[in-house]
Structure formats: C-alpha cells, structure tokens
Image (cartoon, rainbow, N blue to C red):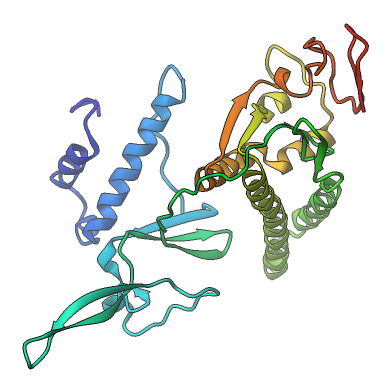
Length: 336
C-alpha cells in the first residue's frame, strides 16, 4: 500500500502474485491465494471506515481462532463433495441434505428429434466451509425472491434485559422473552464455575482432564448461542410476518457497558452480562434480513420515540430508566 497507494483488489492481486513469494506459497492452489488477498483488502477497507485516525492493516489470522473459513470456486464442488480428485473418494457426511440443482438440456435422438433431459448439477455458486467452535458448517448461497407484505400493521419495539423486547402496536402491549434471561444467566454462572475448575488443573498429569473440561465449556457456550439464535430467528420471523413497519431504537450496548468514558457506568455486572447475552445488535441484523425477505420495513429510531415519549401529550421522560410503570410528569398520563 505504501509503494503503490490505494489500489483495487485486482491490482493488489497482480502485484502480490508477481512478487518474490516463498516456494510453499507458489505451490499453493491459485484460488486460495486470491481469496487471502481479497480478504486482506476487505479487512483494510473496514479499518479505514472504522473512524480511527490511523487505520491499521489488521493482524494475521491464527490457527487458534475459534472461527475459520475456506472458500471454494464453483467448479470445486462436484459429486457431493469438495475437490473430489484431491479427497480421492472420501464422502462428505452432513446432518442435512446437500443441495443440488436440476438443469434441463436437450439431447439429440437417433431419429433427429430432441428430448428434454434433466442433469443434476452440484451447485452454481461459490461455496464455503466454516469451522466454528469445533463444528463444521457447509455454506451454500441460495437466491430468494422478496415477498410482498400482506400486513398493514405497525409496531414500535423497546429492547431491554428483563424482557428481550417490549412492543406497542397501537392496540396492545407485547412482551417477548419475559424472564427468559434467567436461564441464560444460570448457564453463564455454570460456565464460570467450570472455568474456575479448569484453572486449578495444572501440570502435565492433568492434560486430558483439561481437554475434557474445555469440551464441556465449549458445549455450554454453543448451547447458550443456540438458545439466543433461536429467539432471534423466531421473533424476527413473527414480527416481519405480522407487521409491515417496525420501529426499533438504536441500542448501544457497548457504550452502556463501557467503564471508561465521559459517563460513568450505572449498570451492575449482572445486568451487563444479561444485556450482552441478548446480543441486541445481532438481532437487529437478523430482523433486517427477515424484513428484506418478507417485504417489511425496519426503521432505526432513537429511544425517545419508543418508551420515553408520552403517548398522550408527546412529552419526553428523560429519567425513565428501567421503570416498569410510565407516568408522565407533564400531563399525568400513566401507562401500566
């Protein structure tokens, strides 16, 4: 970058591949090197958009990273597996059916006529293999057609900790995930206890015990993640099916839990853990994806337009905090 300036990923590919590379890199498959160059270019662009004064070039990936991925070309996936000439007959076993595409073509017959035949094709797009916390995921991109929303209802949501979401659609209040965080919190405490046990297992004689404890910790982390993902996906599907327009306030969890800054943190460590466990930002991304599929609209608003505003006079209650009962200090209107 210092020598050639800000260039496109294609020019960067040309510069790097034509440079003096080690022998082991030259012997590596071409598409693996190209994907590595594209990923490095994307990471650098992301660091420039982060708002920092001195954007960094990122850091090298580690073999110890919990999440790793490898990309494949369209022609690499054949006969239900990747690179069959390299794997030499090894089969890919998956918990779900590996998708395939039926392609129609015309075959000429002996009498000169053409017959429509169907040929099964593995896939028509680039695929990916992801390793996430000792689990393997095969990623196949699927094209979908956006639907048109049949609903005309509107709802305003308020994310929280005790209740994952509280909504008001003009007719009724809706509580989603009321008290469900207690189960997640108990699992988090159980993980803490197991981690403390692991720290006491020192020495070579306890090597296999540490491995078993680490497997238990990973399984509990996966269980918590699966529970949160289940809530995110089910709630997002229901909201985008029942409502045409969804108002969701910006919920800056990272700023609220930060100890350093202009404002002193007022939240306890228990509340902070519960808030981060809900992963509100991840839910917003899931909700927007489901809205795109079903023709709904998600509008980002500030919190003043949801829980802090009196529905009768429009007065903003700036000191509402975590109160379960809203009473307007301006007109006296109360909402249970």
